[in-house]
Figure (cartoon, rainbow, N blue to C red):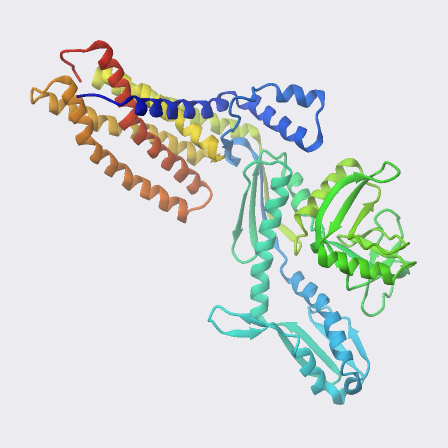
Length: 553
């Protein structure tokens, strides 16, 4: 007989109700979005009357997850950046110089005095006073090299070391350059993602393109310039010993030294040692704060290794100045009054509250390993996105009305019940997309429209099967039951093949293709559920109430 156990009815109704609840916030998109933004602001910076009013616009007991709108629907910024990976080579060799110097000092009897030669070709050159000791010097420097794996399975050294006359030339090997390029791109991708996520934007698209390019798309941001200001800053923080001051940036800094201008004092230039005491990579935390005079500042804390190096340096250089350098500008150059063993400190300057907050964000996210050149930038206005939403809405409405009319005219009351299940199906699609935090794009809307058309396929199979069973003179209850049982395998088989296709599109595709695959895959799952369970439950409710002797499908 046509029966569904009570527990199964409760589960089906519960799943449908849950899907509708999670879909409901999308009907009040602006209100719920303001509530979410206000709640995040209250958690991050405290409550204000305006934030509390915005947060109370949506009840906390209801779900507040939304379907994120993609760049083509919401508007936003699009950037194509090229990472200057060559800069990393020079930084690697700069950090290698102290190790080379200390190693050569151990064989000073053979090589004599050691002096670094400034170069512009991305190599490290060291001049020794005793050319006769070149063989010992080369052997000593080559001992600093490490093995690096290659794609062919072999190993090469990280350094290429050569000598000519009294000069040693050190550069990165080809294998190490390739490995460094890959690490640089991976690090840049992760740092950009952390920076963008931390300032509250929704569902950015950050993808590597080619060898040294990164595609960045951020929905909801005001302009490409705003996005560039955030991710285009390298935020390379270093702590450098101060050698002295210079009259201009073109002054002679001396071997192993560099000149950086002061951020706050116009016309002041500092001569600094090239090799840093510690860098921003040693930071574990940075937070906006206020100094003893109530001015905005940034507090920082080093990890164990950075804290040891910082504490040792400050203990050995009490009374000497050291510079805090951010992106080749000296923020401040305080004099060390006493040792700082705790590994924490404070950066002060002419900051506003917004400046200190953004600097803390950048420092927490980490420094970009190299600068980026923006090859392409676009700002997509919200008006264009609104036009896309309207076009997609019209397409959904037209497709939905066509399907509803077809089902009602073809199958009568059973078609009307299928239409109710179809509307619940669309609600459940939006509920699942909201729950998983998916991003809806124009191709995603196309996937929903396709789902609307496909959703009735299963019901058509069932109803046609019921018609066939009625011709064998079975009772209506038995015909309905057999119709669902014998159509179920065909429904599952037909949808599994489409779901496999959606899975392949998701795994192999990117961007819009993935958006289409997600909505299509979710739509297939909800269509099977509504066709096999929801429509059947609605028919059972109607059948138990009316108890018809005959039915017409």
